[in-house]
Length: 112
Length: 111
Image 1 (tube, rainbow over the protein chains, first blue to last red):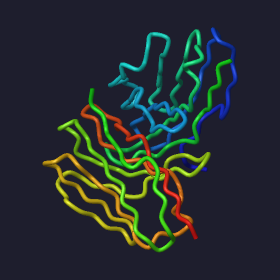
Image 2: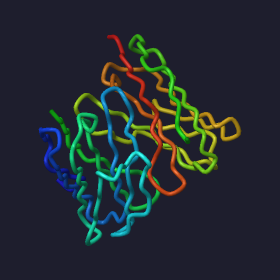
Image 3: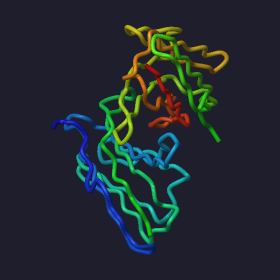
Image 4: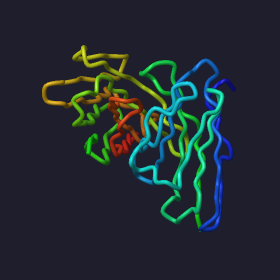
């Protein structure tokens, strides 16, 4: 499968724990995006990388959230001290330009 | 803040009828408008897109129109089929990257 992949697909954690998600974009794509989607809503933009540089970060992304893309390939999204309100589907997407974004299958986070 | 409004939230049509979904955006810097289809439990997939220098684009049974002055854009699906049933999201490009997404329209095509 040469599409965008995400790991894990599902994560259940207890409130206060830290979690880390991984995204592997399509190999030739230099742009990578993270979104959060809650039930019945559209994806909400979280952050954007061009190569290894994090160029944009939404106000939705509190200090407990951090994302990296150290070598301009895969990316990680870490949430520290998780809260129940963090429960959502976390989607990663990649693109080669400013247009079509290809989405991964998402990581569904449940915070108990 | 900047956002995209999408209507209706649910749409039920008879097979063979047309379906229209409308969106309004607020960021004047938006210049690219994709539409995504998301089936239950699956990832969003692009079905059609339009750039701000084009007023209309058509691909078989799907068409999108854009009124940049009014900041409106719409998705039109003709001759709907049961397999068109899904949630559809409109989106508008953000100035610094990424998209604003609408809240989605759940389309149900009744056989």
